[in-house]
Image (cartoon, rainbow, N blue to C red; front, side):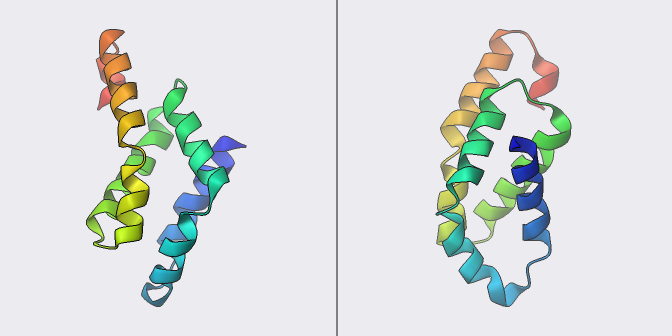
Length: 97
């Protein structure tokens, strides 16, 4: 279920027209199932094929200039840092790219 929610989120954002971005960015803060899925993704042993597009999209959110999207992406920074440091301590540097 986790990957299904995340894949739908990735696909949904790519198809949004510019005039719907404000509504989407406001609605995103209320999507608890998505937030839970993303936190679970970063807490578990994840595969690069799903983490790469997620990180890319979070980075795009941050660079978008929209406050709501920036806040959404910043929520995951502590979890991403923890995942990075955990992989480094396990000597799994290939996963941290």
